[in-house]
Length: 260
Length: 276
Image 1: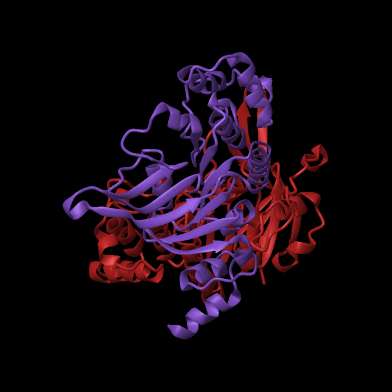
Image 2 (image 1 turned 120 degrees about the horizontal axis):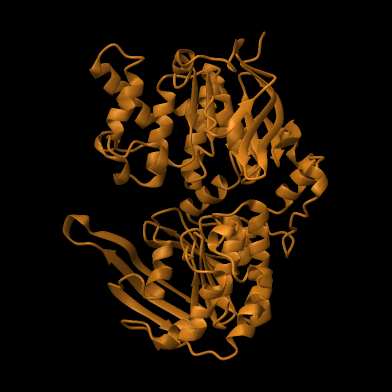
C-alpha cells in the first residue's frame, strides 16, 4: 500500500457525440516520500489525473486511495489538509483582489490553525519571499514570485502530498531553476510526497524518481530516472519524445525532404 | 550583396511616470537569408525589437533607429501605403498566442483566403492554396480546420493555422515571436521543419524570437542574446556552449538535463553591470 494508489482510473467528460474520454484506465501507486512524474503532451490526460485525485474531475471508473483510504465523492476537509495542489498558471490561480496575506490566511482560517500571524510569516520565508511581500496584490508580483506564493499557499497547511501541475511551464528558465530548487528543498526537509505533471522530460528527469508517460489518456510506459538518464525506452512514443526534447536536428529537415 | 535587413541603434521607449523608459537600448544587427535567433527572458526587449522592425510599436511607445533598411528601403519614414505593401506580403509576423491574434468571429478558412487572394487568381485557387498550406503545417484534417472558428481549435492547431496564414504570401522575411512555445515538443519539430525548408529552399530570412536557448542553439545559425534591452552577446548557434558572457552561460546552465545534472540547479546570479 502506497501513499497514493490509483487503480484503473477512467475520466469521461460530456455525453453523446461530445463525449471525451480524457483518461482511459490508468493505474499507478506512489510511495510515501517519493516524487512521481507524469509526462505527456497536451490532451494526454495528465492534468486530469491530478484533478480527479483532488475531486475536480468526475471519476467514471476505477478507485483512488490516499494512504489506504478509498476516496469517494466529495473530498473531506481532512483530505485537503493532507493533499494540496499547485496549479500551472500563476496568473490565473491567484485571486487578483486578494493580497498575499489573505491568500495565505484563508486556508489557515478554514482549517482552524492557531498562530496564523507566525505561520504566514514563516511560509513567506520558506519560499524565499520575506515579509515585504505580505500585503502585495498579485499584479505587484512577477510570475516567479506569484508561483512562490502559490507554493506557499499549498505548503502552509503542512500537507503530506503536493500535486504539482506544470509548476514552472509559465516561467523563464532562470526562474524555473529557482522554483525547482525550492520544491526540491522543501521535499527533503519535510519528507513530502510529490506527483509532478509536466510536458518537459528534462524537468521530470530532474525532479522525479519514477515517471509515467501518457498518450491519449493511456499510460504508455513507466520508467525510472535511471532509465531516462540512460535513455532506455521500450515504447516508440517515449523515444519520439526523448528525441524531440533534444531540440532540432538538421536531419529532421533532410528526412522530410527525402520523403516528400 | 546588400543584406536583407539592416538595423542600427534601434531604440524603443515608453512613457512612464518617471519620464521615458527605454526597453530596447541600441540594438544593431544585419540579417541575410539565414536563421537569426533573438533570445532573452521576459522583459528583455526581444519582442519589442521584432515589432519595431515592422513599425508596430504600440503607442504611446516610440521607436527610433540610426538605420532601419529592408532590402535597401528605409523603413523609418515609410508611408502607410508603403507599409501596406510590406506587411504580410514581404515581411510577416507570427505572434505567440493564437488566442489573441486570430480573428474570433471569422472562420480560419476566411482568414487564410484573405491572405491567399493576393497570390491567387480565382477563389477556388485561393482555397486550394489555403488548404495546401494547412496540410503543410501538419494539420491532419485541413477541411475541418478550414471551416472552424478559432475557439473550436486547440492552442497548437490555432498556432499552426496562424503560421500557415503568414506563409501563404511567401514573405522574404519572417519574424516569428515565440512561434512554437505553446506547442508540444513533437509538433514543435514539425513546425521548425517547415520554417527550415523555407529558409533553405526559398531563401527566406528568419528572425526567431525565443526564450528557449536549447531549441535555438539546435535550430538557428546565429544567436543574439538580449538582456535589459541590450544585446549582450552575439554568437554562432553551434558555439553556444562556449558562450563568453556570464548571462548566456547562466541561462544555459540553469536548464535541467535529461542525463541528470547538478542538484540543486545552478541559478543565475544577476550582475547590475550587465544592464549598463
